[in-house]
Length: 327
Ligand SMILES: Cc1cc2nc3c(=O)[nH]c(=O)nc-3n(C[C@H](O)[C@H](O)[C@H](O)COP(=O)(O)O)c2cc1C
Image 1 (cartoon, rainbow, N blue to C red):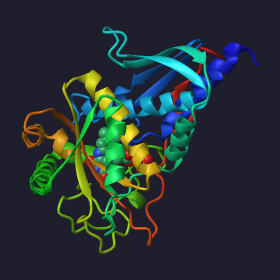
Image 2: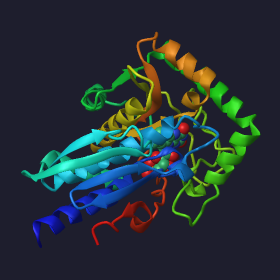
Image 3: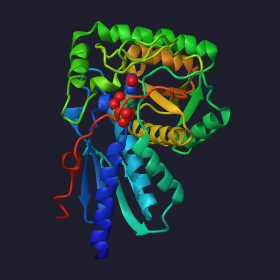
């Protein structure tokens, strides 16, 4: 294989691997373009949540998670890259360009993280009564910091405030017909490779302090009698509230979540309180103004005794990776 085709094969494979990344409502709002010497990440307006995410905050976080997955996939295969974020101010859909690729030794830590991508998933059942080891929380927090973001662990009072805030956000969203229609669309896309199938959504709301997101319809995932007493709630936050920082937040989310997976810790993002402007402001106050909230995360040890949800489907490679420029 020539060096050029080795490179474009690696880029196409990294883009495919990035398809494992989490995204809000499994919208997968990204498209990759493989070029002879670079890989471009573009957002897809059709898969943006126009009603609940008009600013593209969660779209950028989702795309950032895919970007981090692609970076790891390249490092695992022994490629060093330069990442240009938002490289063209006149092209708002171009979120990142991975460029200046050169060979280096394959990174064993990245290889391990690529394995974690295949098993990571969102388990919305209540967590078990097993506590999350403090050393695991520290490691997850460090992984987030290494990507330029912060993870604040909430204390008991803050968790109670979060519970009220998340409950209020769900009520606001349930009362809005446009938001209800949007949610119904993304929870009834069986067979499309996007959205949330019934099997990953709880059969009934779990009896937890902080309510899980209200998806507006019951799923078929048995929740069991569990609680969230042993869950740790954390807030991903940072210094700015604009597209570049949301993209970085997604990279940090990926780093933290894959690290959690490696350590046997389950993570569930909770974003409704970030979507509603009023509750987003409350979350900001909860952080005492030290940063802008990007996402709430529930960390816990999943119930091992009962089977969890299946993997959520994905779009095909042909739908998200454009190789026409290198064919
Ligand atoms: C930015 C973002 C926001 C999310 N918000 C929620 C949420 O509010 N509630 C929830 O249950 N899952 C949430 N998720 C998880 C996604 O629904 C999940 O990643 C997606 O359906 C793909 O499934 P998987 O994580 O099992 O691969 C969110 C994920 C991302 C990246």
